[in-house]
Length: 375
Image 1 (tube, rainbow, N blue to C red):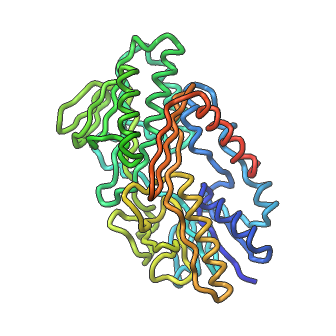
Image 2: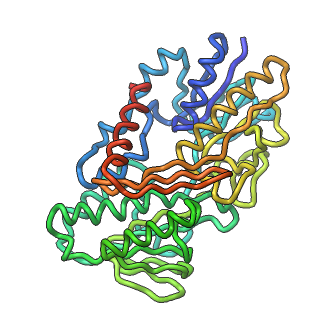
Image 3: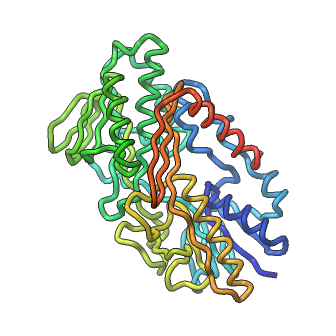
């Protein structure tokens, strides 16, 4: 019986798992992750205002894995041997006939003073830290921003930062404290959100202006201090800094012979195959894939890549040539606690629909719909 190992427990890993089991009842599947749990990262934006807690968005996977007849190997990957057929972990080795790497990426934290900033997408604890800091602040300056990986244009996650920005603004208004705070949005890009399309850029900047949010755009970041953001274009006060750095590959990739992109990700082709390795695939934030610069690092894109990777791996088991590719598609709702703006982009067109309550509630419904399969 063929065995497949999946590294990770996020969107790409679990979608690959579900696709494999749907396509094949016979294949043996082992999932490697430090914990048997899934964190629904899009809902971190609702932790600071108390709408969501860890219990709401961290889903234990034991029952789901049992239903799927999947073995969980609790551990963190640390290397590969024999062309990917053996995964080394801090709790022993795991062998396989096929491998899907879906363990996410790593944030580039080289900026001096980065310890003074909170990186929201690092997990629930980071979002809780934002929640607690907002409670203690009586007023002052809040700075929210992001940057990218210059060698990997797609390796950034700016969308959530717009949501944290607008969400904090709305939360302070709901608490009748907005007048006591100055909010500043910053990024080295002159046009924030350009990957979402020109209409989205205009919509985001217009929303910031409407909410009286200052902007500091187009200047390379130099450093953070305890109460300050410093750029080549000047500096500004910040009592609370939320910052999303660009992304690169996981550190354990350095202990392998896997091919890397200039930005440090695993180099993949259009079929999600890791180039030069037999029956080794990658999906989601771990990989660098062919496509346009605006191709997103987001859950939806990870799901599409994971489906292709799983189907192609099973095709190889059946002595068929991999043929599945993934659609390059950006879909998101930029939420602002009460309303949301819908953004869609494909190779052929882009669409931006103005902020309204329907999209906010659609985002909340999708959360319930997506998580129910794992509960």
